[in-house]
Each structure stands twice: as structure tokens, then as C-alpha cells.
Image (cartoon, rainbow, N blue to C red; front, side, top):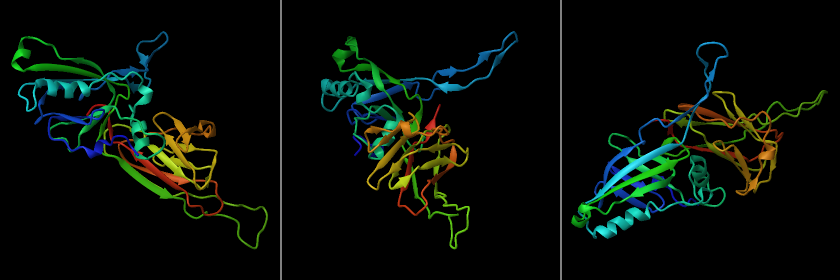
Length: 317
């Protein structure tokens, strides 16, 4: 089961939930929220423009989101349990993370844990409730700066804290997990009796479900496929892109497909990227409704299930 679920926390305006410590800071607590930077900004863009040869201007290339840096400032003034107790809560929520592979710091890994696939990791990130937003914003990262100077104000119980988070994921997400699922319908277009050559044995045409990305930017889903099924295919019907996997699953097997990292795992641990067909694109979901189709090469009815998970995403919120 997931180590931390952001959706379990309820926040008031100007409150921040830091998952690593399970702590709520900000309005109404001993640690006041004093402002933020980078949270509602467009992060650095990796521009793919290429200069035109012996011509003015450039050829437009892909623009991709880079690493996001989020700064949050706090102030400790009046406390219910003492200045040091409040400061200890803040420092506990901002301890250094040495190895990012030991924690969940991408939306794909977070969704994998919601799907219950593989081992759980502590989730490193934060959730911030800003006024007038219907849902808190989530960012995934780790603290890279925490300063709490002992100055003249300290003797009067006031501490000004400045923090900074490095967010390799780059995107911001609503605190809403989108889910949908479907099975494989009965095979169609198969042979009938009396049989005449040439014979056609048919295949599962696939069911469908929708994932509504209520954000404003492309988000990458996580899929699980339960067996039994032969050569499953997941399709984004809006774009025609598909994920085709050349593998046969038993009834007890679960295949995980992380579209953000482009990885496929069997039963939570075994890498199965060798089964990815050359026609595959690990697609994203654009804003709005996305119809997901599911098919296979089975010629008889099977009880396989496809389930999708996603978070509404923003490049700037």
C-alpha cells in the first residue's frame, strides 16, 4: 500500500503539507506561511530551437519543462509549545535526502504506489493550498536549502525561515487522482462454422474508458494490466498513439506501465521493457477528456483488466 497519500490531508488556505514528516505548516499553526516563489511560475524551459543554416531566425523545436525550484518562507513568532519545538517540527520536515532512488519524487512513482504495484517508498514532496484554488497543488522534490538565522529577533522568539526545494519532475499537479478501468470484450470477427478457407481467428477489439485531465498541461498516466491476456495494447484514441506489449500474462500477473519514465514492470519488480513493441509511444494525456482503448490478440474471451491513473497537471498553475 502507498506509504503516503496526499489526498488524505485536508488543508486550509495558506497551509502546506510536507509528506516526509506528515506535518502541516502555515496558517493556524506555530509556523506561519510568509510567501513562496516558483510555485506559480513557469519553470526553466529546455528550448529545442535550432539556428537556420545561412538564414535568419531558427527552426522551432520542442520546448520541454526543466527542473522547478520552489521557495517557501516561514516565520515562527508566538508558539503554543515553545520556539524550539516549533523549529524542530520545521527542521524535521526539511532533512536532506541523500539518494533519490529511495524515495518517491515523480508523479509516475507516486501513481504506481496508488496502484499498489511494487514496494512502497516514502513520498517526498509538498502540497500547498492557495486561496481560490479548488484543490491544493502538489510538487514532487526534495529540500536543498533551509536557513533559520539566530539573530537579534531570535531572543524574542521570532525566527525567519527560508527554504528551497529542487523538483526534477518540473510539473505541478492537482491533489486529485484520476482513475478509470475496463476489461476486454468478447472477441469479434472470428471464424464461424461451417468453416471456409482462408480462416480468420479474430482478436479482442478492446474496451474503453475515459481519463479527464482537468489540468492545463499534458500529464503522463500509469497503467496496470491484470492477466490473463496475450499481447495487450493500450491506445490513446485521441492521438492514435499506442503501447503494445509482446507478452502473455497469467491470471496472477500484474503488469505496470509508467508512461512518465517509459518503463514496464511485471509483478512489481521484474523489468519487462524487452516486451515493448517498436510501434509503442508512452503517451501523455492532453487537457480534457482522453478516451483510452484496450485490446489484445486473444481469440477467446479473457478476464483481463486495464486500469489507468493520472494527476491533473500544469506547467504553470
